[in-house]
Length: 112
Image (cartoon, rainbow, N blue to C red):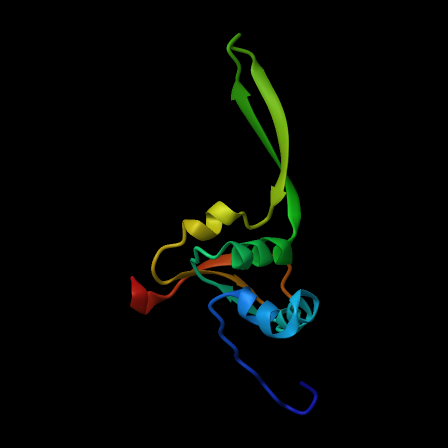
């Protein structure tokens, strides 16, 4: 980057990197990209990579129990869950921008 070199890479599965470079080196290579565009994929390894990339969180929720009393619960999960990725529609992506703390959902206008 200090020399002005910019690289854009697209892969269908992180397994492509793992197959060529091994899991450890493949993860290091993928981690070298500052910005990530995650599209819908049925590939479990790629969804797992995206989920791990954006980290874990705790979700608090409340519902009414059978006794009609409020029940509070917490669940540990991922900032971007596997089902979030599977729910992406054509033209949508979960995007993580370098130096920005949170990923966001993006809809490409020409794909609506």
